[in-house]
Image (tube, rainbow, N blue to C red; front, side):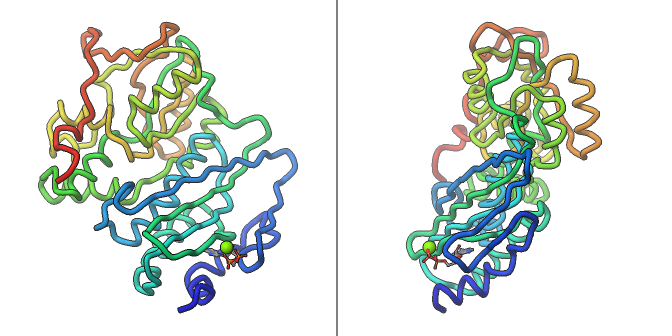
Length: 322
Ligand code: ADP
Ligand code: MG
């Protein structure tokens, strides 16, 4: 299969969408950005053995490569539209490509994303997606913008994906029903793009959780020049995570574990109730886990409000390798 056959068979024909003047097949794509909108662009590479274990099924690799970029646009409160796919493959395996494309396009269709071009090269497996979206001019949500008194919310549940990776790598053993849920959360993260409009209406700062809550909230605090108080007992934990590793370790996964692709958003206190209601209407559960303070630094408190030392990253419990 030549490079051109490969592209034609697996990646062409998914480029019809609003704003696409010219899609796959020429030297570059041509896009039309509606008046009054700004272009929002993100790119992320996932590398076999670094960002996903070698055992990851190809459809999950396709899904994940797009999901991590959708999540970046969700955190900016932008609407995703147009993707570029740069694929580096050790070989042109038709079954592998079919499964990869199925994972990629299942998520792309769900989010109305067109594949407008890319690049295909030979080498160790790596996938780069560049995702373009739009936002009404001046309305993108940034990491800077949090102010003392604002509430801190997260979407969904935290820690599942890191525990799922530990399950995939044989470092964490759990009953199969729970193990399957956790694995799925790592392999097929559900980016929170449904909240883009809600974020634009209510939120003062946002980030997606790719490296772990403590690390990513830390970026918001640094960019905003503020600190925070986090109620560790309010962290949203799934039943599967609690059953698989108990409350103490589950909290460590939730604070330190990456790959969840949930959102962490900061909301002015006066808008907190409206934000919670609007998120619920959009079908996304959100949890208030703390408050922004003017004193720099991140303070974790227990149920009695007493300061505790944030636990270390959950997966350290299981070592760095199987
Ligand atoms: P060039 O030699 O100009 O770089 P390519 O041969 O790389 O062109 O690509 C030809 C066309 O196929 C371009 O429109 C490019 O965007 C598209 N393309 C290449 N690889 C992919 C891919 N993996 N997915 C989608 N489109 C691709
Ligand atoms: Mg090229």
